Length: 212
Image 1 (tube, rainbow, N blue to C red):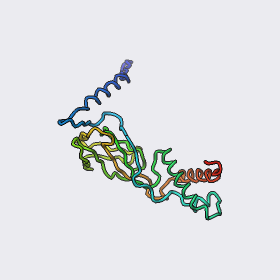
Image 2: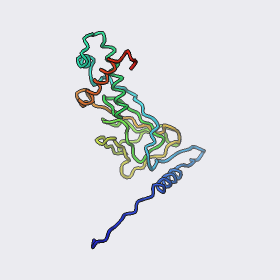
Image 3: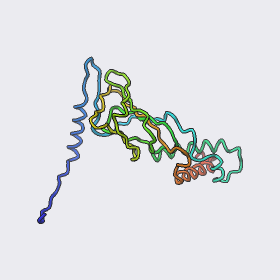
Image 4: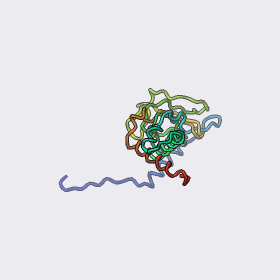
């Protein structure tokens, strides 16, 4: 007001990095009996791996649809077309970081982050959040202890108000989030994705002799 200009000081990125390192070290410790554990991280999801435990049982396009698109009249090519459709779908999922058809995913983390940002979308449901406790036993977090936002991309999981993520045994893959992702049926898959798949399959079919 009255011509005065205000400037908000911006934090120094170097100071922020140092603070995060200090906080991370503060949370690491030794439990009684020599058991090592780690509390939830203050930043970063620390994803160790993503696996598809149950792959899709259907594809977004059928062999007949692809043969019609590519004007392939030899019905004996059906088996090869199905393999190409599957390969194209897997390639597109990896490129887009999306699950095209219904599949069960498992994401493994070194420890609990402040909140989870799941790598595959759209997410249909959360199956479980499991972890290895400080005694080395597998535990399951009650769904009442966390909130989910499955509408956002990426989907998010965060602790409920008043709940703190538990300490975990310090080892790789100590936390596992299992969830179902993908569109529920081929009819739900956006047409743009189906067309992209058909174009990719068509290209590979026409260039098989080139080893593509």
